[in-house]
Image 1 (cartoon, one colour):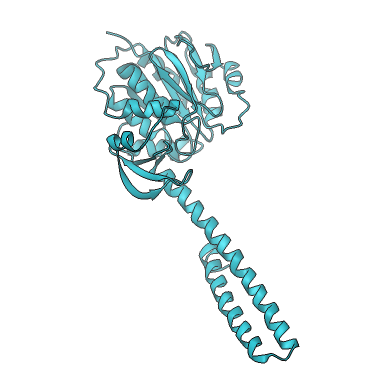
Image 2 (image 1 turned 120 degrees about the vertical axis):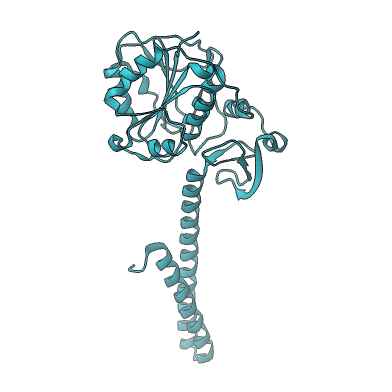
Length: 327
């Protein structure tokens, strides 16, 4: 029986310090490959591997496409690339963003679940929103072990809390105890892998940049009356379990939590644009009324003033919507 030898770690806000602390506490001689995704944006400087390498007792390097996995070695996702595992090799994908992020945590977790099943350990650390929750559930469905940092001590507890909501978490643990737990888990027999859920490999291929489309999406998702914030395409709701997720035909993916946050931002922006346009109309009507009064066109001035007041009322309503009752 094989042992657990693949550890994947994901986080965002506060995760750099968390991973540094983990490497300080990690017992030497861990017989596993460690893969790390932290949200760094598209123009990150790729210094994370060097930062972690200074703290770690094992080598930590930036992941390279096609590199063979080594035990006793840690790999960090580079900026603007999904970090994936295919068989015993690293793959870097420029597929669509997931939860507005690339690198994203879910694709890494999903890929190790497909490639290594019960040999995997997935860890969600401190962070915002809920990237990692869906991938964590996929790891558990495929027979792996799932770990979440205790939200009470996390710099940003939302990501651990959202992972817990899936109901697929084996361990909730303080950061200071995580290193010993990982060492313990890698010494245990992995057990039997479960059957890979339908559509999981397809989602890994999307992260790599493989072509998607209506017919392929229809196998794993049902079309819903929502549009993708990134490309405007039609969204489909994924059929596989928790958490609730959506994908567009291009491949952009969102949990419901991320999607509603993005949509709220779009609504706020649209309201502010509308407010600006209405305030411009107030200004124009005021100028038209002044011009009419100067030329003794009192009826025209009255009409312009009435329109100005109507627009002012609209503007006040929008301000209250945007800024609250006491603006």
